[in-house]
Length: 473
Length: 76
Image (cartoon, rainbow over all chains, first blue to last red; front, side):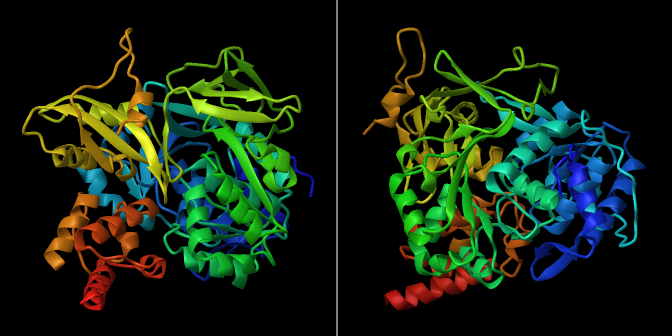
């Protein structure tokens, strides 16, 4: 099938038209055909269209479950914009994002009932209460230039801003990924990554677009079961963040080796990939590709590399995909292309079409991109990004804290963990800071280590010297 | 032992009620990262060490309690 699908809803609708009875989704042993997935999405689209106008925003707060996928496509088919809340969002950030994006209502699952009451967000619909027809049809109201998704990402100040993606941006990224990874209708993808992040959702887009099959997991907790499922179901593709791959390789190496009979590739995303992890992966799956990419919320999957095919480029994050331009301006990686979002919530747009990423890097003579560092000291905790400024602001709210600075420290399991340095009054207890952070922030942002010090190091012009703290003690 | 587990649990999940038999999928924020943090905090508080096979099979708080008791007995 030729790939000329330029809206996200086409991924589902066109496959459902051609392969209605093919299994598109498996969750906890229940199989859903494409016809059924479309029908469920259409039911939700009908309900959404009765409550919201085209291009109005609808919040989506759900964990990984089939209803998340039906709701996502349903909101899009109604012509609305999905405000994609991370499933583990804190109360504070939920309120912040809702106030900024002003969704007409939030579609969520009932387990978040108390969270929504606590935050006084009252315009809520529970997916469990929506009609669920297996014979519903709703004509998509979408055009490729329409906005599809709002996802919040933190800028260099740590204050989140809403990225507005259009259908054509997501479709361009999807077609590029399909091209590089050669996704096809025979692929069976095991997807345990959060669907509220572009990594997990991107795999759904690709698999639906090529009429493949997704085996969905609620999370990556039962990693042993995930590995067993790859073998049992003869899965051909698998994506996971480096922290999950490390747990697999360190604990279930022999079992994972058996997956090599079926897996065409394993995909992982931007985080520091350690050499021993790469070598272990090559050793476990000698015949599978180990694909690695670089991307941001604003510019999903901009480069790709099959590490096993370019042993001379193991430190690279790959080459730009077709149609993607990358240049380096003052050491900063800048990206242009049809997949790049052109607007933020509030109207801020890109500088002449170029996205200035805030990441430092360089291109080699073969146009391979190398990622050096974030300009903004981002911390990567098991694939979740933490901006130190947000944690610092939260700690500074605690009575007794005079100053605070946050850095990422090495963590064997998660890659990095958050460490806070605090200058405080004499009788200050570090537990107070942790407790306050637990109440205000997502769990992974809470400092695992807190050290009381006498002074936070600043440069002569008043800039916080995080590097000195990273090497502290 | 249950009280101590409850205390650790509520530190990781301050907005949830501690219910021994509630499935982890029904807690607001019991995701993979929280799971690792919870088991790691339990290990240090109870001075025990879980195997990865133990960790991946935990489905509800009661499983944690049973596991802590088993590990404590193994240590004695």
